[in-house]
Length: 345
Ligand SMILES: Cc1cc2nc3c(=O)[nH]c(=O)nc-3n(C[C@H](O)[C@H](O)[C@H](O)COP(=O)(O)OP(=O)(O)OC[C@H]3O[C@@H](n4cnc5c(N)ncnc54)[C@H](O)[C@@H]3O)c2cc1C
Image 1 (spheres, rainbow, N blue to C red):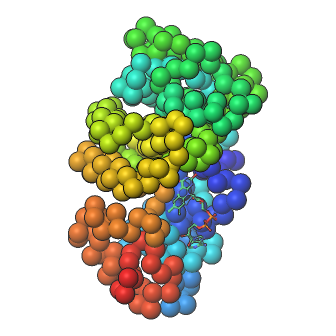
Image 2 (spheres, protein in one colour):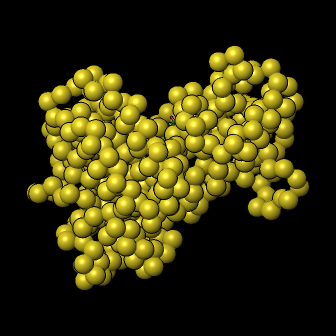
């Protein structure tokens, strides 16, 4: 059986941490976030009571949903000590492809085509930009890139199918249909497990390449899917008006989740542009808000984004959150200052 949460921190993350952060990762499209993978919890509440909520029920309409309140609360309402998790069958066959798309709109149409033809077989659909490949070349010259000419935009599609279906054949069929529809101009379908890993390595190395270059400002945003192409154009223009920045925009397109990271021009350091960090963040987050999106898709609030939550969060939701925190943890002993500001801060 498969526990399908696949996040960058998979080597170190614990179950409690993944649930407390409602971690997402690359397979949310198919299996959901940590919240969707949890049936029950055992939690030590701030007053020392133990909530025995480990029932493995799909249906349980017995009042307020404590489980979903605790998940994603970042440890501010209690300590998760045990969990009942959902497991899935391991797909009989898996396949991965890289396809060069005309742009974000074409990528969305390709996603729709993939979902229509492969249904729940689509496990991951990751959008990447040329900037990510350039950063890889710059910071990890030994990494083999599976492209001769770097594409402007491309997607990684990962599928997992039931017995009797051939993933390579399914991806070939998808590619041919997409080519005919004018959505893609080139593509590669992994012919071996080693090649699949090579494709994934490109995607999984991009955050490390970003880290090595060092962003001036990075953003983990989500948007309604249909708003993404216009956001990318509008945000690109707005950032260009602030300076000659490099933008590496990539992420879990199927979830509407983009990692929108802004870097200093080549040959310049992030420190030279530090005074523009706040303006960049405000520009990006204001555009996200205007498009009906979220300034934190999967990275939570922590302490760093408390101000952003106060700025963009719904007032009624915020006051309900404060009331819940005060009722369950009046002494503010659970992860104090995370998610909600302490009274004296
Ligand atoms: C809010 C948030 C969201 C994140 N989302 C993603 C993501 O979608 N994809 C990804 O690749 N990485 C993500 N990360 C990075 C993070 O390292 C992983 O999500 C990982 O799941 C954290 O697990 P950990 O065991 O290392 O927890 P830690 O890093 O130790 O803790 C993370 C948070 O969870 C709380 N916590 C930890 N254990 C418990 C527990 N038993 N009970 C209650 N609270 C607890 C901590 O107080 C802290 O606020 C996220 C990080 C944060 C802070």
